[in-house]
Length: 427
Image: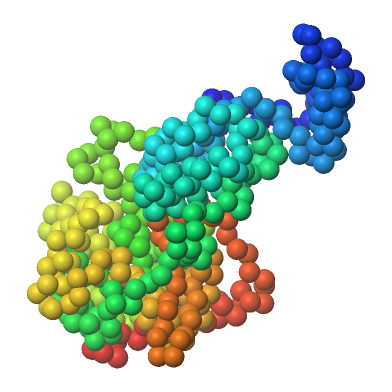
């Protein structure tokens, strides 16, 4: 569905008196635009003149307040399709993220609310939706809640509804409430510095050594690691610019790409805060230099077949790694070296945990991780540390960013520059 967004940009308005309309009562609203056009809207179907006058007074109040709804007949299904194309498609960089939103809308929201008019959706409808989805899956319910909040705020902004029916509606009480846009890190699923040392040493003889370094010693996300290039390295200041990830661009077709290249396209990062410049620990910097030597040897050996894209994590032919390339090597490393069987993403949590345990500024750590907000806090209960970091689900990246005050941001930047894990002390 295509909505004419210009309808909300009226500059003047008039409301007629109540009149008989088709054996009932109603009134008309005339919206006037800068180009001189007038768009009439009829409000009818009231049983009594008194009822129509009460509705007319309410409409006038909304017009004065700027909350008048100009799209009164839009259904949820049509709005969700419009929102996905006009808002989400323009804000995400990869088809994976877009598909995550689309699946939540298509499979969980539209079947329950799709036929209703947007203006008729109530808090009760939203609560019922949350209750049903919680019975199905708590994780799905949380995703549905996020989509409803973001989409309804967009609908309010475009004057499709006067207020968000999802505002303040929570999941059922039986669902453990999480701090907004956060998750708990289970420290039993992170590595100690000694275990990191074992992993790094063991990974030297595998194709994923650089990927392990970028993950556990610099906190990069999986797709960010695969997108890092030698040109992103400042060899003088020893910093790394994180400015892309590999994935699938929206609107592209598999048949238009060489085999295995479709899901290795360069796409923009998740949020503005994901674009960041990180200090490179000495140990990682030396490894980058050694890896560059290998890259140059491979390029010279295969002048006709080498793909000189400049990726640090690549095959001997220069081809970028797939998002799951690390999996088999990583699990084998853990098993053969007696390390905890943790997820690849838990290495990123390990990086975050080590910084927090060493009393680094939580906001500075948040910037290093590429988080959208200051989401990392630490609560200490006796000898037990509970560490909270952001949820990195694809869908969570689109919450509006916090703009810190200037003095606080300056202090964070100063500490941010010096935040590195001193891994070289262990080698």
